[in-house]
Length: 387
Ligand SMILES: NC(=O)C1=CN([C@@H]2O[C@H](COP(=O)(O)OP(=O)(O)OC[C@H]3O[C@@H](n4cnc5c(N)ncnc54)[C@H](O)[C@@H]3O)[C@@H](O)[C@H]2O)C=CC1
Ligand SMILES: O=C(O)CCC(=O)C(=O)O
Image (cartoon, rainbow, N blue to C red):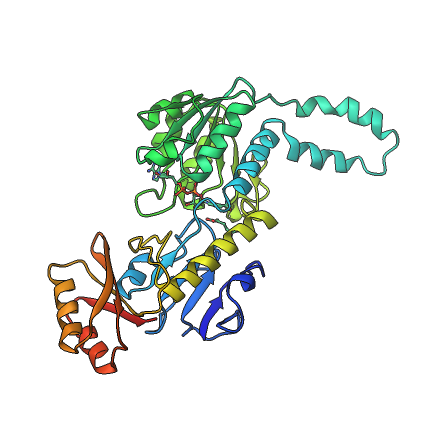
């Protein structure tokens, strides 16, 4: 029985993939669970137990997980790339049009007419104050052309916008899905200088914190609308407020408001709803649950943000999975130890990613605790598991 602690509310569809006979999945488990499934809850303060082998992030961003600490401890961190991208895309397009057409202000004003006589006439008389531009023919700058950025770029092209994309790390696979109408900016400045709307779709990490700050705002067009459905820390708040004060930024639309941003007349504060659709929640939950199940049952690793991809088919053999440092002669030491105990390796896989590597052995016979202890004692071995 594997224990999986839920750190957030997760779509119950996970139970279809993690059946009760083999998995105890609950939010009431202790912190020494074999794995965790999480959305936005912070794991940074957690001390992981020796038996914890995986964390599945049912979503894209992993800035709530201490990735380096997990790698050190041999904990595989998964995410669910693209599973909620459509949910975010739809909200970005909706919020962009909402901001351009002054819809939030208009809704609020319409409510003030409640109970007054002649509402239809009052509506016609007052509506002029909410006139807002169409997006067709305007330029949208998309920063980060990953799962979400590409969908936003393509949807914006489809409604007649000119789209400029910026992503120096764009993968070849992703590039195939970008509409031919998206102009690729070589330099961020080009996007900043030409865009009427700018939308952020990059991960938040040490390199991207404060990605938009005073130098970037100063290069933007006057009256630009900036959208942030990626993470709050990507935008330096003091620089943003200066840019709003000067009129450089007309509106800021954010899924990650902090206290200063609530009730600000030119900030559309959304309570992190980008992926809050039944469809996205279900897609993420299914993907996360499948990845955990495959990892527990076969040792397969796909969509990990800290470990190499390794797809190993199910097998009746005794399987030993080993996470270890990516150093010379690690595999040699492992196989010598196995041979010392008279065990034959029927099949094996070995993959690496940076400083870390993963070896999967299929053995013809059961492995003893003594042999496992000797493998664990090899310098550079991080985590050993028998399936
Ligand atoms: N508001 C919400 O509910 C949601 C927010 N997100 C946020 O959106 C982010 C992006 O999500 P996805 O598109 O699914 O991720 P993704 O990994 O598919 O795409 C991220 C893209 O950003 C690019 N990138 C990284 N650093 C960059 C830089 N310095 N300059 C330009 N491009 C850079 C990468 O090359 C990649 O193409 C997530 O990391 C997460 O923080 C994701 C899902 C839901
Ligand atoms: O689970 C959620 O609602 C958060 C989604 C998100 O921010 C992400 O996937 O990065």
